Amino acid sequence: AIFKEPTITPSAVQVQEMGLKKAWGSPNGAMRKGWNGITISRDTIHIEGIELGYKNQVLFERHAVGGEYGAGWNQVGEGTLLTTYIPKDGDAPFVVDKRDLTDKNNVCVVYHNPYDNVRELAHVFFKRCLEHQVTPYIV
Image 1 (cartoon, one colour):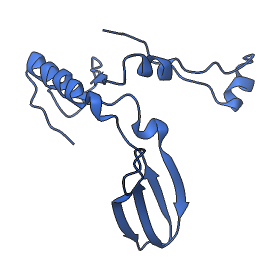
Image 2 (spheres, rainbow, N blue to C red):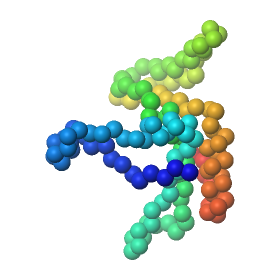
Image 3 (cartoon, one colour):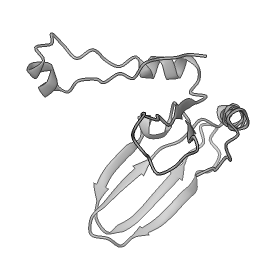
Image 4 (cartoon, rainbow, N blue to C red):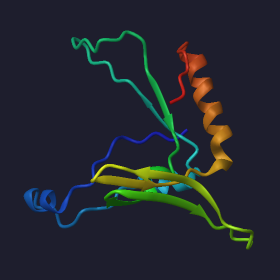
């Protein structure tokens, strides 16, 4: 297991305000790639004296590479968004998703998750749910 305390990468403004020499990059990307992005585990934090509205522990698991870390995005207007996959082996391209955008302002985000570690991610998640006696919900 890898344990790491939370880190915050300062913005350019924060670098000036805090008198830092530079904004050191977060080690998170290198760590995620190092374990093939199998999972990032997050648990609820209970603070004594603060009532959160729920009693049971909440566990979170998600991919640690791909996804929003490498997402392409753009702000667009009305129209059609077409996501096309073009195979590297020369097979015929095909449409992965097509949707009509009817709002005047939209943000389109496209990303992927590596499929080779989905099984491991699921195993880690369900094992943790069993250990903590928590009902798993997949969203």
